[in-house]
Length: 413
Image 1 (tube, rainbow, N blue to C red):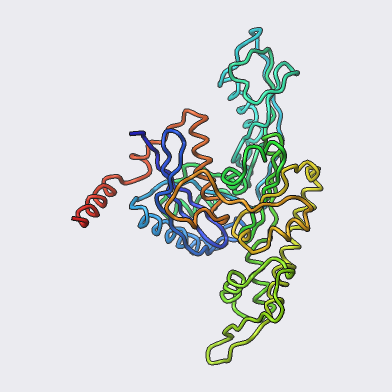
Image 2: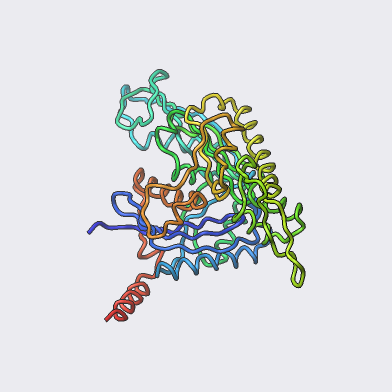
């Protein structure tokens, strides 16, 4: 029987917190064995604004996941996002004293250490150093130099950083729940891992992940990450717009958005009305569905137009041969693909997490792209490195799990 490692992805968003339990086998296959979810409180736009509320929300999600999976967890993978994250291009090289030296992992690590040394600052924390390409002897471009011969190795990297104070605040609230952090993954990087195909990354694609309070964008070209950006607009702002326009509570506005919302008035039928409760002991109010959809369309149009401007400013807009991939909870909005194609003037598809197995169909929805992508990111990391995580010692109480399993078996006979 193949050995496996069990990891837990904690997706801390502004609208929900998801805890996904994944079993990774030796071949890198991922099997989701349980999940939990809670309404997110105390976190806005990737920043902690109320620690006590955030801690309660995380505990609620984790407890639900533990109950569903039968595992007790004390260490997690954590996502992180927001405008305080920056992506920069860096370039370093090393020359070898030995002619035609065979390049090994230590040589590649030396380049990474050089990059690390540039960011020795109390105000900045490195989250990821991602290779873009390598150049041998100032001539040959390669993407995996290990085992090749050369006199000089140059590496080009994308370095993703975060303000140390922001990172420490997120770290503190998670550790305050009694959890340890195994690793952190930037939101759009995790989502891209779960929804994009290799050929899209090669030809040129923009991933747009619209969450509760943030819209993240990641652009890939020639298989490498070229751009990372976040704007402080998301689905919660649409909810506020609806609440303001119709003078109703945010909870009711959210319900209307989910059950009756669309991204374009082009698909609304004539004389389509919605009766909604106003306040206790008062008569229902009737609104025209077109007005609701119009409110959603206005805000989505603004978000898409801002993101298009960011793409154009980066110089990458005309290089998106594979177009746009939309993911995140807002990507579930009916006809959002049609609206996005009109504004971006590119092919658009809805990105759903793939390449994993589970018993719950809901986890294949766009809102779980980040959480599933975190597990896949860890799987890829284990495949490329010699890092080993001893799950039976560090992550779970296996004795407790076995006792529960025995108890369940006894109940069947």
